[in-house]
Length: 262
Ligand code: DGL
Image 1: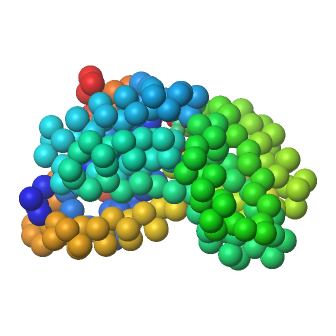
Image 2: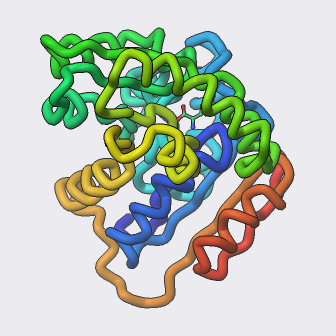
Image 3: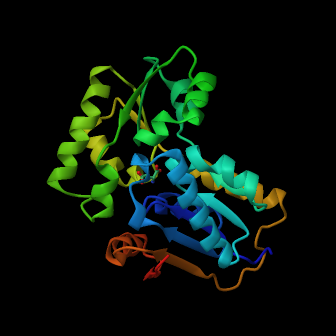
């Protein structure tokens, strides 16, 4: 089992921001990445739909022999991981918006979170805010349209700049000093967001923390790959592979995006 791959899925290319952190921390692991871009954005779907899609993605990764699955999507994590853990035996790692460090380090006691509608509506986000952000105002903003632009290859475009400004302004007006990126697609936009918010706002995502958590669970379950031989990585997408390929090329690890029907 140790030499089996780690599975990662997202509604598209967003989970590649998590993949990259896992790649850095666990260079010996084989990885199968699944971009369910055909069904993006998940953020507009109901909980039931997200569970159904997450089951389908899990089955795909299981058919490839994955030993652990990272649900590299906040929307699927907040809505479907509980169900997946109840119905499958392998370990699932979920992503969670970095509200805790933002609330702990905020001086203004006002932090912003940019996420999908479905993540912001979820019980898990409510519980996280209740637990870790007592006495801190959490200003929520739906990042409507951002995932769709990234998935259509318009990460750097006039449309993106305008949309980001529109979403971020209400949070800046509230004087946030931390901005939590609560969607795994958004770290691709960090530089552009930094230009809008300036240096007084700290931008946080959860990629590194998820990679660390993945390592801890692999160790605990005795699943770390101890073989230092050639690594195998597969990147599947059920939509235009060009969008994913462009990002993989930027990672410069020599991997190819593979179009698959599922
Ligand atoms: N990357 C997904 C997330 O973290 C995007 C969700 C969507 O497809 O709307 O929530």
